[in-house]
Image (cartoon, protein in one colour):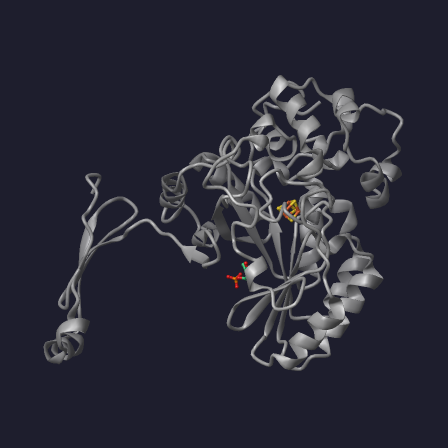
Length: 406
Ligand SMILES: *Cc1c(COP(=O)(O)O)cnc(C)c1O
Ligand code: SF4
């Protein structure tokens, strides 16, 4: 049984105490194939393990033609057996709210399809690309920004043209960074993934490879020593994992992350700000502390994209700012992610920060610290005199109204 009295900061095991089939052997549980084969992917399987609410039951029945439901036994066991508001549960069990219409929501909120020069390749930023190698994941997140293609049951299908992508990358010498995502590239066999990495490494101008994956969290059994050894042949290779709540970082997950790190793979984490999951400064602080303990640097905190059916999971931008405000200065700087909004319609990631500059003119910058104390930084003489000769447009004085709090 999940020890609910343990603080969120404790690393606990998957505790297969309420996995229904008590005859599962240790070897089966620890096998990625067994985990994938035994995913919870139907109403019947779900109800073998949990008592569902009406909202969830209806959600499961209706999710079949939008984003499939699938939950690995490992991740499923983190769901609290009786708490209907369990933060793990909200991430993977569909709810009826997914079918609600919201005029602000979109099927492709980040405008990826309009930035695809070749099917499966998103080229939005000058020097780096997003390579969608598969539409499958180990489990499906209800708020997935790519649910239009991910899981294979939605309106659109992903038809990545691998050869055309490689040709495009060979021709585009400005691309120095390739991010493999999907879906989840770590669901490929070692051999299939290696074939892609080898092909990319053969392109001389590609300096940097990275993989965005939630497999270390959903399916830590997949992070075998053999996989890590293979990945290490293609350095510099970095990985961004995806965790939202401290309970996701179990002992098994921590060990999987350490295996990756021990093979020289620098790890970052991306979180999505989700109502009822991590829209709480204490929860986020516990999460970033567990990430640091697992040698993962919090990278981005995303405002939830305007993906169709996500209204029950989205929260305000102010909540994200409040979380950052409660981290910066209050805890290890390495533990503070950059809060971003992926601009609706296709503007890319935009950083959003609490305001620490209260007033700025050519002579002074008035700042406040994490405690709300105000300080004045005088500009150097050289900058002041340069400013004297500057004309109209670039002598802009920037002023922000300080909030009542400061
Ligand atoms: C997020 C993203 C990247 C990578 O952005 P970084 O800020 O460098 O991590 C690249 N391409 C697309 C389309 C993305 O959405
Ligand atoms: S793991 Fe990533 S791609 Fe897969 S469903 Fe979750 S958010 Fe979407």
